[in-house]
Length: 132
Image (cartoon, rainbow, N blue to C red; front, side, top):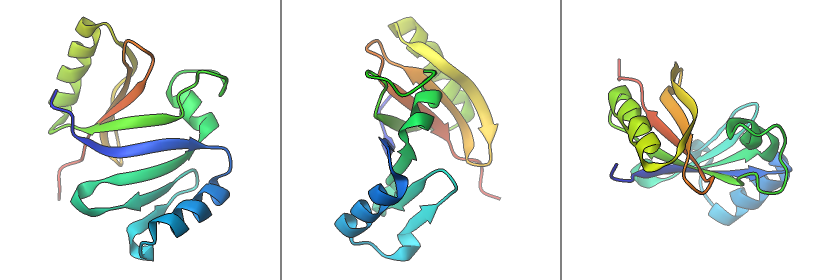
């Protein structure tokens, strides 16, 4: 895998407070911000995104029952070229000593999977859906 980190997602305790902080810090236009019910994303040049996500939900994504000490506070996301590449990387994760958190699944955002490296750090693999 040639790392191509396109999204950094950090866990926050107060989504509105974190949004206010980063909105001021980043000083970007409203059309570069996307918000969902459970997250806020800041979109930058070259396809890079910075996402705020509730810490409890990051714990769930990482397969942890609650956000306790040691629960990852961030997720690194690698943009793969295709769903097949996502699946290939997952096979290599196992060979390298990592663990699969969730197998590749299709959603409105594309094909994605989550894995844990040998030290418990969480990665998301994603392949965007084909353009129509």
